Image (tube, rainbow, N blue to C red; front, side):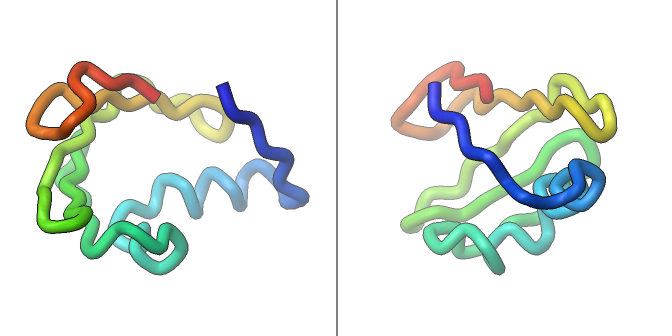
Length: 77
């Protein structure tokens, strides 16, 4: 597991990490991200995949899964 310390209030970090429509602004390899409610669609290197939000407990926990259509199957982050 990778862990990174971010020197910002957790409410601000939550706002950035859950603003799916702006992911491509700070994650260099995402070409497009669309918020679809409890799912977000992202395009990376010509592949579109969907992440399903499993749990969102503001501002401390955000869990999602990638159930299909990517090289890594049944991913949960």
